[in-house]
Length: 119
Image (cartoon, rainbow, N blue to C red):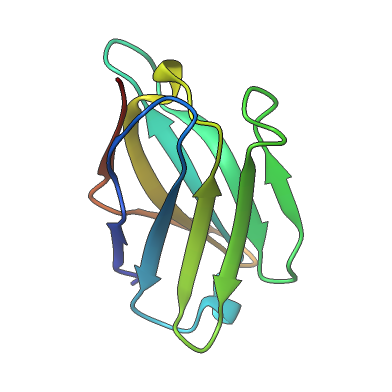
């Protein structure tokens, strides 16, 4: 089991920045992939960024260049730095953890944190 707790969301003006945090309940080196997803009202949840336990990262094309996903292994925390935010980035952002085993995989979600980009 992995518990994930997000923080750092809020209201920001267009062009502003936010850093989201996701604290995991166990050693993140033991988690295959951690990532961030978002879901805007009336839309499907979509991938934002991921980081593997080896440190490889991926980013959504729509936000590439404006994001940095990073981690602090001592704090078991993954961060998402978002810059140059746009109104269309408004969504609930969810932390995700995927654990791959030989015969199965497991997935965990945080409760989400609201990001609102508005003037």
